[in-house]
Structures are given as structure tokens and as C-alpha cells.
Length: 248
Image (cartoon, rainbow, N blue to C red; front, top):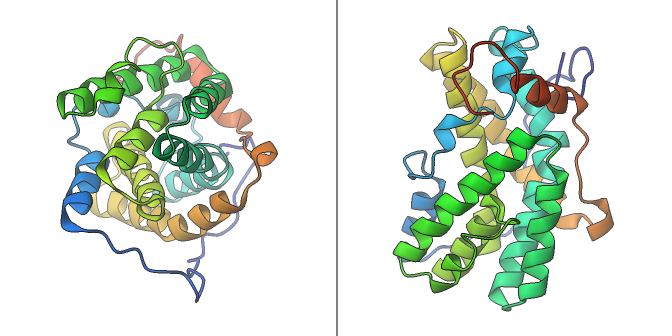
């Protein structure tokens, strides 16, 4: 069963980026900042969250490399590409133009889009942790976000990109790959997946990033939003799961 609550999933095929896709050139300081932001070593606590994967494993939705790849592919295509990625692009643009109303609105939209208490708390926790880190790194605007109920990881990631001179064309795929890396890391702790198999799953997700980012860039405001009932149910059930390694 995949994250959509369906049996099976379409076969994974590489998606080539459009021929006219413009290569993104990053100055060294911005590139290094982007690598820092996307690193699993960033001390914001992302390693403590599985986003419902722990229950998906418990219920047998994910059993091995193939089911892991299929499940995460569904979440990526029908979740991340339709919600977090287009919101990140809008938040980055809003921070660049100092549009406080837009940053508040889109961050609140993301909080409201999290179906369970655990997912909302995860979003806020990561957002506050990143706000503290950015404030310590000299991003003064980050401090104001720490105490807000609508603080989100995506919003602070967008603020970081805007503050460090990272173009949106590089920021969005970096966020997407960082998400994929964290999910595969969580599965490696939940399943006897093996290092090589885990890297194959991560590589398969990486192939999807260019097309997902291109799709996210074309969405109108009214089209933003994901529908992942299987993942939502797994997240809700996780709150009462008997044994847990993760907070979500």
C-alpha cells in the first residue's frame, strides 16, 4: 500500500529535465550556505521524526527496498511536490521583497495543511530550531519567528535562502533532496534495508527532483495542497503506537 492509500504504485522511471532548463550558478558563499542548510548534520532535530514512516512499517505498508521506494515516491510526487515545494518558492520570494503578510499567510497555510497533531508539532519544532540557528548566524529576522504559532521549517528555510543569496532554483531542489535524505535515513533505522539499498532508494528519489521542482513552479495558488490519506492515517496511528523510535 502506498501513501495515497492505494495498492501498488506506478513503476519508477527517470525523468529527464527539460532541454531548455537553465543551469543555476551559485557563488561559493551561497553554495556553502545551501550545503549547510540541506545537511543532515544541521542541528535542528530532523533525525527524530519519521513523518509517519514508523507506523507505515509497523502496518506492513513498507517491508523492503521496493515498497520503500514506491511509498516515498508517492509521498514525494503527491505531497511534497504539491505542497512544500511551491510554498517554499512563495516564501522565498516573499522574504526577498519583505512582504510580511505573505510570509505569515503561507506559513500559516502549511501549518493548517498538516493533518495530525504530531505533524504540526514537528513543523513548528523544526521551524523554531532553525530560527534559533539562523538568529545565531546573524539573520535578525529569524528571531521574531521563534515564538510564533505559525512558525514552520519551510518558512525558515525560505528565509535562510533569501538571507544567504541562494536563488530559488537551487533552494527548492536542495530542500527536496534534504527531505528525501531524512526519510531514507529514518527507514534505515526501521528496516534491515542495508546501506547500498538505502542509497538506491535515495538515488531513485533524486531522479524525481527536477520534474517535481518544475511542476511546483507552475502551480497556481489555488492548486497548492496534497492529499495523502494513507500517510495521514499512519501519522495519526503513530500517536498511540506501543513502541516508537520517532516523535512522528
